[in-house]
Length: 359
Image (cartoon, rainbow, N blue to C red; front, side):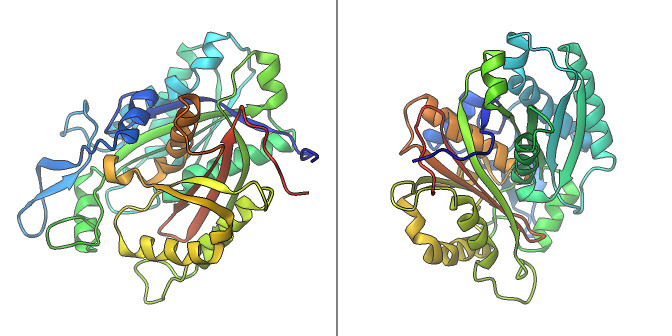
């Protein structure tokens, strides 16, 4: 069967800073072991006076808030992801960077984009890199939307390499109060809430020709990324039957061979909210023929809901499982669901696997 004519895009570096690990490998190992760090916060309490349950970074002070918290999450994950470029002394005129951020919400730090860019540019300069950075403020799907943009630009020949990331933190007083008021905060009296989390994830992606010429190692290959929109959103009077998510999953799976290229594993941002579980149930009923097994992982059980960081972190988890020989198969589906309506899905495959595509 012929390979597709578009430029292959490969993941060559990953970075993570999560409540379960300070680096990507540790985070992946903790998720494989189902290690949960969801705990009572030392001073935040909910409307009933009970301590709020959440997953916080293991090192950052609970008193650190605002944009500074985002910066401290993003910097180490950024440094991990670009390490292959630094180690191989790859010369670049500029490194394009696209970072997913949370949607507008109470407690979202002012000047987040500017302060984050300032720190990452300074960090990059210290490593001998020059950045061209932009952000996508679209919530849970922002990281995969950033990946979608990067893949399209690489396949059009506009760039050869791009750093894709996402950073988010619900650990802000005003944000937590907003979640509590909207009955989204996990508690003894709210079974449909979620545990807030915080994290940063980055993936370095490049064309296969760049990977070869730079002597880099491919960790995974990006087969497809698709973003759609769901009209029947959470916190509205409409009823969601998963149409937007179904379209995203079907679109992402379209390049796969329908007979032998089915999905073996899924990474997603289900977090305990009834809306998300129902949405996926409807999508799965429509698209069940695309799956060969039901290995579904939702790391929010371990590290809380990490919002805009979800997509890049899922890509890193999939790559780590393949590298360690612990995956359920060579193809992985990643999907995310933003409150504003965006639905994104991506298909990755093991870089060592001879993928089969539809004719």
